[in-house]
Image (tube, rainbow over all chains, first blue to last red):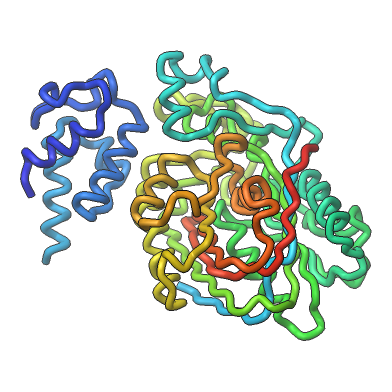
Length: 81
Length: 349
């Protein structure tokens, strides 16, 4: 699990927000383009790229992009063991 | 997982009816910021929906669809042995709406009638029930009516649900014939019972307070008699379970995705269905959509899609997969063969 790659995947879900506006510490819910539909695309991206189930609460409880990454990283590790 | 296999029964004819009144999602400015409306429409893929008048119920839409099916296929009421009505929006709590429909349709007293209630996956379950009855000796024809009028249980100020749901009634005639083998895989996960729910009922008795509109999560408004959906969790459930169930169905039946001529999904939202298409690597032209015209019509959406998009296209023989998912949580997929299935175009009430 690579944080840089996760940030790139995450940033790729936005149409108008430039990728360089998103980093590990970005409070993603404060981005103007953030919406419940972008949240769905995060769930879809995590399923596709990492084969992990992401719950609504995972997004609701996260503030930064790194928070999301940490949840995915833990689940990927759990899957491996 | 329940695996059900049937021989020599199938869908002989199908029809659908929608209300005349069209509502346009472009007019949802009171609910969604104007600058976001186009993006919402593009993502969910729903331009317009049909909404039943206050005195029109799911059963009325089904009644008209059934009349159309019987007229188009020259079906005598006396030849119907079983009538099934699948809905979450039946006419009354007691009696079963199928009994009222037996009388309205002029079916004989020898007809067995039964209501089935489930979530958006309901058509798959009801169809498997229809196939099971039609397989029995002495039963020749089963008429399955699947209709929903979610406009009656969704609050206009609920921005998760209101842009999605539309109303429709459908009729499916199941009978014995040269259909070959059909396979249904059906699944349930009751740990997700709170993901799509109407709170008030028996466990939480209906009181005057149940009818009070209250502001809920993220400013959505509803009463306890109206439906709640956790959009993110349902999305997560669907994208993880639905493609897997289709793959399992193909494995169980020894088919590949290329053997499938048509794959009809429950029309939940476009974004989700596009994800399924990508994940299953099926040719997009094999997956019909009617969601832009009718929205998510819950359990009626699979037969409505067939009536809307496949009328005149099911002559000859086709291998068809149906897949649906919804409240419960409940989901399922089925592989069957159609043989000169007569599909009537969608009519209006």
